[in-house]
Image (tube, rainbow, N blue to C red; front, side, top):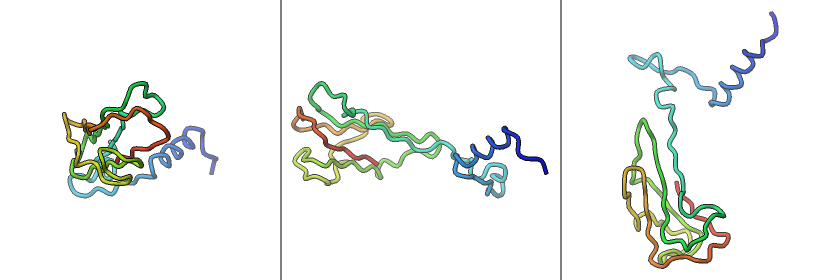
Length: 124
């Protein structure tokens, strides 16, 4: 048997990079299986920006998207490792904000934060 060609090797590498998907569909989905929802959910923290905050922080703003199956807004979790809006570090903050437009979540701050040190906002 001849060795794999460079293109065949690249095909294997791409397949591995995708998580080694296999077609497990049945019925009407028999030709798609794993590929039915190829677009993964995306979450981006747009404010605060890592190392790019020249003005006081007045809100935490997130962008969320999942083009195929959609986003379940009730599952959003937002936490900070510092006191924010009177909540202790690690407290769930998502109930203090709301989706202001499709895919855009805003959590307004009661008191702006002007000294952003090495602090973290975690969203999932």
